[in-house]
Length: 632
Image 1 (cartoon, rainbow, N blue to C red):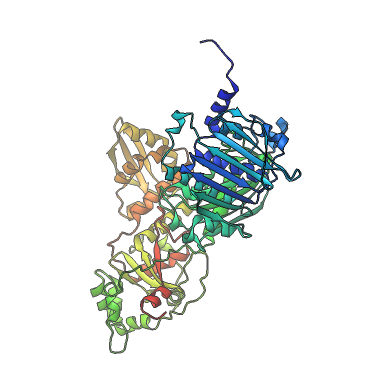
Image 2 (spheres, rainbow, N blue to C red; image 1 turned 180 degrees about the vertical axis):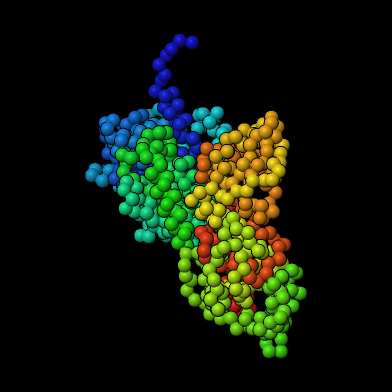
């Protein structure tokens, strides 16, 4: 086939394939044009999910009648003039392709009135065929109508989804744009029915809550980083328990422009590492302001992908800002009681002694299988009514929460401090042999173990239920990581080296992980084409009776073992080591061991979640109990 010049219409249709993917793409381009025109009120109407009709009206500066023909021509724009303008783009659009591309695959009508002229005009593009400019009645601003999108391009039209799906994409686009422009009103009508109404707001928080929904109202954490040189960051993010299984709930804007950036998404996930379960993504909105010369938005026709001149700086700034917001917050999840009756689950509360208190520690054991165990049960039985009196006399008066961990165990502190409780240390440190499962400080009385899995206590806002395994896992994780900042973990050679079978892929990952394994206290080397030998292992894993061979095989079977992301690899292997070594559900803890674990709630980072992101504790608010008992 000979080389030939493509017709302008075919060129526009090819360009439309990059710019116009679906109705939502058209809405995005038209609304961005309205924002560039200075509009403060934008109304969108769609029919048939947008494939049959799209109408976008705004109150912007409008287009002069003698410029309408240029407005629908390819590569015509008012936003840039020279190549130098491409390095300092502050507008949404700049390519001059949108209207021409839409007009090549649909019937396009543009009606506009410029502020200076006071007289409206219109032009029509019918699948590439232009009409003349005609007078039209319209107030200042612009109205763009798009009819029969892809009507003459059936190959493209058949790839569109159902009307509800396409309409949902339109909603997503409008909400994303609206997040970055709280001073602009947005409305969406579907078949004459209003489905989105975002009025102008002075407080950006109100716009974010309006988009994310009532479930996030008053619950979002503010991210604020200013004075960091070329970048400023502001946003509102969800609590860890509000994370979603997809990334759709996390929106980002760069200088007001909606963007999708894998590096920034990675920074967000790293900030939440250990607070949300793997595979889940935090919810929220992040606005990044940066000098336009520090970012290239001319990467893709859709303009949602960008390229930073200093990506590491932006990544670090976002990571630091989000981590600061999380560390300053009370991250203990509230545990609503729902509609279930409290009668059966709290039956023990009705059994009282003659003095009005709980009968005795033996009743706790009877009602919670494996409840107070070991030294706790013995001590409580010997104390009798005195142990019950500690609960009866405890003050449940709410008080302000203190610290940035989200726990304020005032009563527990008093009990632990009575008689001069020594500071934790010695056997409690990783690498030193503990006499019991956990270091035993002076016992406290305002807690107990239930079901050999849960620790029950209270703080100023409610009853706190703690997962003993999850909390101990977090404690061990943080102590291990702290030790690694100053050197390798203590290691102990085996008297007799042991072989473990490995396949080729595991051996390859073992070789690639030698430096990391040495830091962690392992000496494991390949000893044959299908085996490796363990010569030494971390001392604390020996003390915790962990099956090291099984753990190493499990670790080397994961794809993460061969990734180049060193921080992620270290975190994941520490996750596994901590999980294997931590106390388990079913382990009976004595009162001194429980008290030691509770002290760690305020002594380690992110004590509210285990390294895998699961919560370590839940709180039943006192106000919820008062409501359920009819005292509210």
